[in-house]
Image (cartoon, rainbow, N blue to C red):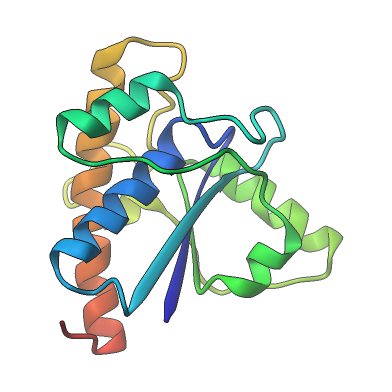
Length: 161
């Protein structure tokens, strides 16, 4: 089983949405026995909380359900996940800082938009302080990026349904 962890700051907007989209896409492809995912935040702001209502609503508009409670990245995550997918450079910096504290290394810490063809930025914007349209934009970015990420995973690991 290939394990993927999506990481943002608070684990209530971008990363739980990414987790839900990933799970939806792998289920559609019949690959949920090959891949698993989770999400977390680098901060402790929203531990135990449900995702932002706007993330839930946006996912529902696309027939995707989010089943997640906020949690914080920990050193076991670095050890246990094959891929750590960060939403922005600040997340990557915080992940690396945690790794230094535990003398850990990880070869697959990647930015989500690395996989998006013709991305206009390498970061997924944080929609928290904006409106519904920001959440829809993030959904579109994640949907496209994750689709390409899954294609790469299937090729790299020679995984077929």
